[in-house]
Image (tube, rainbow, N blue to C red):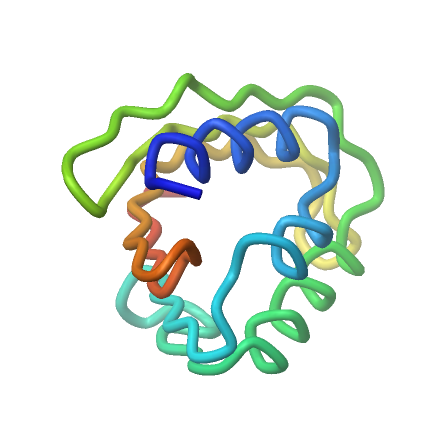
Length: 119
């Protein structure tokens, strides 16, 4: 798959609530994931570690009230989209989150992801 096809598939799967399946299908084994400085999981490397980080985040969710994933914008081997969530967490109650997600693609797999947000 090329970058546009991967971007379209990630957005479609996230819109359908298949966030964990995205990891299995589209991510490289050597994925590097970056959160905002000072946040838990600020730098996570490797598919098993990224999978565990996502399981932990989803395990803290009580309810998704709404979510939106924008159409992707592709530039070369990178793409971006925005994600908005209204979520109730076990640990911190209900929050509205807006983030910009930037992905890097190499050899038909996502090799990097970085999230920009304020809460």
